[in-house]
Image (tube, rainbow over all chains, first blue to last red; front, side, top):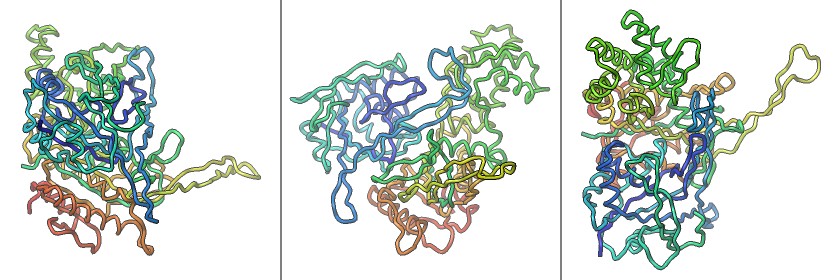
Amino acid sequence: MRDYLILKLQGPMQSWGEHTFEGKRPSGNFPTRSALLGLLGACLGIRRNEAGRLQQLADSIVFAVRKEERFRIRHDGRKTSLPIIKATDYHTVRDAREDYSGLKSHETIQTWREYLFDAAYTVAVWNTDVATMSLVELEQAVKSPHFTPYLGRRSCPLSRPLFETSFSAANACAALRMIPSDGGVIYSEEPGETRTIRLRDVPLVRQPRQFASRNVHVYGGDDVSE
Amino acid sequence: MKNFINFHILISHSPSCLNRDDMNMQKSAIFGGERRVRVSSQSLKRAIRKSDYYRQHLGEASVRTKKLDELVAIMNDRLAGRYDAELVKKTVALLAGKESSVGVATEGDAVAPWAIEEVAWFCEQVKRALAQGQDEKALGKLLKNETAAMRQALASGVDIALAGRMATSGLMSELGKVDGALAVAHVLTTHSVDADIDWFTAVDDLQELGSGHLDTQEFSSGVFYRYASLNVKQLQENLGNAPREKALEIGAHLLHMLATIVPSAKQQSFAAHNLADLALVSFSDIPVSLANAFEKPVRSVNGSGFKEPSIAELHNYWQQIHTGYGLSERCGEFILGQSSVPEGITRKSTIEELKTWVMNNGEG
């Protein structure tokens, strides 16, 4: 048995950034490891330049995320699925650069930012063997955050508190199954007899905006195109 | 001490098109499986930042630009009589990590907000360093230990303290990064909205038959939910450890602007200059939006319109989330008309009274 902290990520709009230059800003289909570390780091009050504490946090915790299956009841009583919609928001930004080369100058650049609508996630967090930040400390932080927590973008607020519960369970999937749900694919850092995908979303703390890869183990669902 | 002030606003707009996408359609979102009209947070924030109320009560907004030579000219103009032109130019170059020179367009790496008093503060430091014969490197090192004093200089440019700044070059990349204290959500309608398309012609007075121009314009009316949260400690810190009272005063002004300011897009054609019907403010340990009150889109029942059922849903949901999560909050509300407010919310009969309540730390 191991201790788990369960968080809920709910809000009408979310955006879990993938690799990008400034013009195009895509979102993944579920929160990246870098996003979750950033979210918890914000709650703990770790500043962007505190590399030591950021690394300490990264070394202390492991995640499993369930992308919640959702349904709605229609007027006539039919139950239909409520899919996550990925939509692109269009913006102009005055006087910004379009890419990192800095060679071209533009009066106004166009940006396309992806958002997820009708998404909801349940996250199980647990400690590694070498953890120096406890789940109790994290629980306190998400209940009374230091910096403003948000769902990938500052303009995507929480629509309920992050904290759901904490308890012991045999493994991450078992922990998530203890939280009532209509189902959904689980993307876990805990290996099992299942499919594995490779994601490049592990922040290299001392090299900002650089990422390493990790294995994500997918439990349930047919689609591994994430 | 509750660290977050959450603002929940319901504002009804007559037909309008306040925020458009690249297809010239209204910005929209899917929420609860149905289409809503949306006003982006950037659009609302800019309208607030550029408003007369902002200038009167929070001071001049910073200049957001990467045009360094034009910036130097503006700073020279504003700081004339305090610092000589050469010093201002040197200071801006140091901050931006780039020199500007006459007749050559010089651009910084990115759009960054520049606050006048902040530049003045740096001018003072550069002047002092030059007088002591220090070079730029030594100055940079010296200033790293004075971030609190520098933040103090931001106090007259509340803009950056609220909205934040990600600077990437020059001295600013070390000293100038500020995490904003205010988070503003995208504004969504509480109900689903179908597109209305206005087909219009523009008459050419010098043309005898037909019209000079044909086009279409999407528009709609709606009840919008606005949400923003202010991180009070963060704002205090960004303002150079300002007292809580100062942050609360800014919070009261934010409330006023969130309840009254409307983006200007297409307003010459639509004039949807509407004020909020409801403003609910909570002092809380955690920033939580009440948008889920409208996840099931509000429906008009027997010609009720959307405003009253939206207010009822917001109150209903507030009660649920408040008890469901055992939130310890202090709540105050201004609401137009006769509607009652739930137990646990202090009712204020004018927006001014609610502002005073915010300034009093949610008491009284």
